[in-house]
Image (spheres, rainbow, N blue to C red):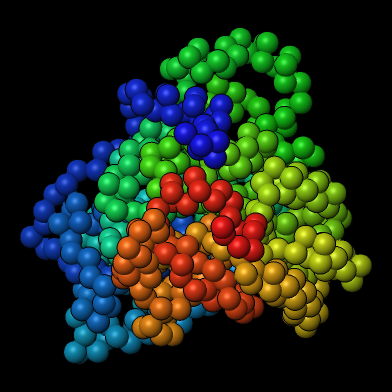
Length: 562
């Protein structure tokens, strides 16, 4: 076995335990299948993050188990469910506009539409206000209550005047719901990509963020239940799995690990562990803190590093990514797993939000500019060639021009590969809404955001220009949108790559016989041109991940393969 495929200590520990794992899967209740004489055709429309995409898959699984049909066309549906996002005001405005369209569709005599439901974060945030919004929504269901959607739909068949809010709405948050026993139904089962939810909720309480109030407290799925789901996806032909959570890398499964603590070599004696771990924030990256102390909840638990190693070990031909992490939860163990495991993608999301220490303090992010930069340096030392992406908020409460300038300088210094950039919008219930003043004028927010975007794009364009001549192993996702003669793929480092042509040779085939390039294929691709957000490549051959890494290692560092 080549050095590139050597297991890390964490990988060996996690895989050995999962192989014989028999611990039960915790859940709020069992999902009972039942057919219904009043089966409905239901269309689910998803907005927001990848977590919402996975939640829609969970809802499809629940609906099918209760005898309902799921369709891919709103015009053929009896019910339309909108799975919503509430992170920013603009996201909610899109939902309100869509609800108005659906109300008009529902009143049309030609339409089959009978009911409209709002699911997810906006449902949790606005609750009964959605039911009273001029008949726009018939049912409302929060992220922890998806098992109740069939009951709410059954009630929706009755006249609205007969129903109480409880009969049309469930927005109860849970301390233990993870849907671990629900088999998600993907919208496109043929896709080589899949998402798997590993934890839900967030405890960070950043002052700008509504997620803890719409998604509830953090709770993690049992490691063995996640590995089983991922193994089923691999057996179904999936080639890339993205592990999901609101704070995905804070994952900690004490439920499974407690039964095998001696075998894993954890400290069994709590007093000894406390003495050895006097710093309660030791599980974090150096220099990071939070509003809670992580040491107790993570002692004797499987960590996120354990989970990533275990999922990656299922099949070395399947890539593993994860999102959305918090930078505090990148200890060396996790960075080491990413560095040492070839099929764990070398692309990490590290949301900075601001480059100013004083702004970060008002945001309650738990780190300074210097700690963040130290983490970036450490990450690039441990994972050569890593691509780093980030999030930024412009115009947060009290932000000065000097603080904004520090964000610009951070962008210039780090040069992120990808960034998600927004101007601040106040969210009810958050710490900022209660204790800070949204005092940056709207025009100033927009001007600062434009400067952040321009700075990021300039750095990303330089980074993409440096890709010309490099060779990547890319995973083909499908036919390119702009041309049937091209294929769309993604590099290990998360960059969109357009492959020119749909045929190439098979790597290692002495006859060099040409083959068709298909979704799910790994292609050796040499970058020939670079746009601001897309790379254009020539295919050198279809291969396997194992063959590529054994022969070339991290080939994207080099300008030519030999």
